[in-house]
Image (cartoon, rainbow, N blue to C red; front, side, top):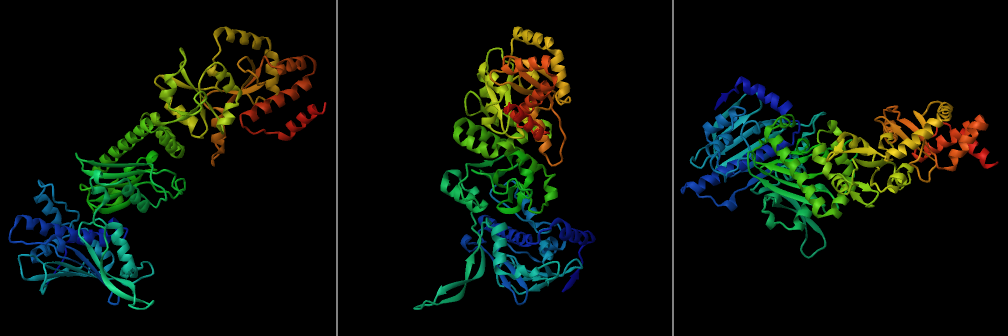
Amino acid sequence: MANKEFKAESKRLLDLMINSIYTNKEIFLRELISNASDAIDKLYFRSLTDKNVKVNREDLKINITIDKDNRIITVTDNGCGMNEKELDENLGTIAKSGSLKFKEDLEEKDDVDIIGQFGVGFYSAFMVADKVSVESRTFDEKQGYKWESSGADGYTIEPCEKEDVGTKITLHIKEKTEEEDYDEFLDNYKIQEIIRKYSNYIRYPIQMEVEKRRKKEGTEEYESYKDIETINSMTPLWKKDKKDITEEEYNNFYKEKFYDSENPLKVIHSSVEGQYKYISLLYIPKNLPWDFYNKDFEKGLELYSNGVLIMEKCGDLLPDYFSFVRGLVDSDDLSLNISREMLQHDRGVKVIAKNIENKIKSELENLLKNDRENYEKFFENFGVQLKFGAYNNFGMNKDKLKDLLLFYSSTEKKLVTFKEYVSRMKEGQTSIYYASGESIDKIDMLPQVESFKDKGYEVLYLTDNIDEFTLQIIMDYDGKSFANVSQESSDIESEEEKKVIEKVNEDNKDLLSFMKETLNNEVQSVRFTHKLKNHPVCLTNEGFISVGMEKTLNAMQNNQNAKAQMVLEINDNHEIAKKIRFLYQTDKEEFKKYSKILYAQARLIEGLEIENPTEISNLVCEYLSK
């Protein structure tokens, strides 16, 4: 028996790999099972080309046993095995991959998938074991060989008796410490859980001896017995032909996999051939996940390499605005031995992510076009996410998402798209009009909205806090700018009407200036207007920040102390206009009281707080009692 040392770089890689690359210790079993599957693949492929190698596919399997008392786990396969030289080359040098070389030799053949790589993956066993032995025998040799190591110090290789072709890996599990509970890897149920989590879709049976219960014959009592059971399901749903999968199978898989009690709203199953080959199975949920707006919610798709789980939540595969999508991606072009940090820079992942983003967008567009009822249900749950996506990053994705957005229409009395709004704009209309508020009913009663509707203009009602910010960042649609009906610049009066009201305000400039001073300059200006129909007053605003935006910004945790430049407008055709003109001429003190009440009234209509509610209440009561 010869003692051999790892090369210096292998020692460093071993330490780095254990402590840095793999932070999740349970993946050691995934790596060993993947290697075992590769070894079986190699033998089976050889049997197809070498008539001297006879293999019954039904006999190919991976066996796992647990000896809790002696702290041993074994992983056994009946694959190609390794001779002395291969053990030394593949396991003596970290990152030396026998599977990788095999794949390179067969790269022109499309029917062989190699999912693991002897080398880095194999050494993950040292995360849980303080000694690892590998007994292996190839089909061509009667002699078996045993490789054994206790870590970075070195390894030995010696002949051994091995009756069957294949490989048996024995792990001596570390003792439990205060920091790490290695005992869990000796628990039968824990090992089954790991297998189903990471290796459920390995194509060969993974078998274990499991404890079961049955009724004793002729009695009502139960007895325990042990039986060999296949733990993995072997065939991934997503690798089946779509025409062979029923809607019920899709739905059941979704509910079991993602713990949802309801069927999904939409299933997106696609297989892509090209620069990067992958299969994706995506689901759009019917309802919001219960923790969707929880700070701990983590977006992402399950990422597989040829049926072996690499990552449970790969956030790099989804943009934030599609974070509600659930599902998985399986690609033969991704290595098992890849960390979360490495994935962020992997070109293949970036290409796949871009394709998935385009696919989701396309499917949503089709849903909007062909199944409006279900799209509106979807938008009710996830519309805010799309709006935020259009607004975020300075509107970088606004052009991708703007045609997916819906807003309530004052004329249609339902949700409409920008395209639908523009298609029925009045001749000569250059802006898309909108109003914001807490609810559709409250917006519908706004004085400004009343005047626009009265003149036959359609108004979009914005009820989500993000809405107005989104429209500001989109800026325009089909050359039509967005205009808030409460914005001074959104005046729809004719030039003749404007001249008439301009003269009214000029004739009353002293009155209006005095009212502004009375309100402690809380408003930018006060003016008479003819655009109101029945309401006595309203607030409009000048500048970028609207009244609605002021409310949203100041409701945030880090109070923005935002201030809209508001204008108090008084209906010149209302009786109140005559009253304040009279008071201004006859009783300035009464005029001041009226001014404060009118301003408070305008703020209440907009859903704004009144800074001095007690004073206003007393003034109202004073006039009610007269």
